[in-house]
Image 1 (tube, rainbow, N blue to C red):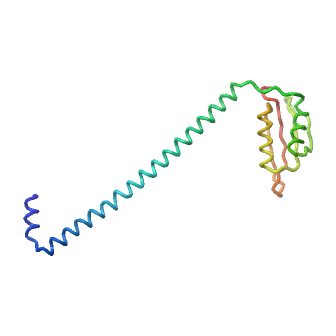
Image 2 (image 1 turned 45 degrees about the horizontal axis):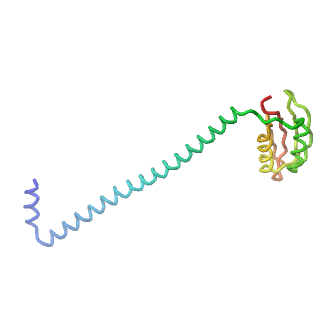
Amino acid sequence: MIANLKTWFDGRAPREKYMLMVAAALFCVTVIWGLYVPIGDALSSAKTRHTDAVIRYGETQARVRAIEQIGKGVPAQLAGPLDTLIRDRANEAGFELASVGPAAGGGVQLAIAKAKPAALLGWVATLENGGMLVDSFSATDNGDKTVAVQMTVKAQGR
């Protein structure tokens, strides 16, 4: 078969040989551009996605370990009555408590009429880091980029 192709090619005029070689070169360039480049891009994209997935997996594992440590740990002891601590921490954070009272199950129910959401959630996180547990939380939009909040707080481990 190769001998037949060589005989056929040798039978062509020099101008036709030149045109056939150019056509073969263009065909090779088209195949490389049409297959090699997309495959390379796909591999690059796959490597990026894999790297992102490995990072997300590591972050998730770290969070799981942190949650396991919380579950194993002994809750922090509170330095006084729960309602007094909540009032003090709310005043320190600049929140005006609308009401504070006992809740069913030994916790404290409180209401805040006006609070910025970001500051409020940061304050809730400090409460939880300080040995308190937010048992229920309800926020309502005030329409002026603040929220009204009702929540129940308990001591951790109780």
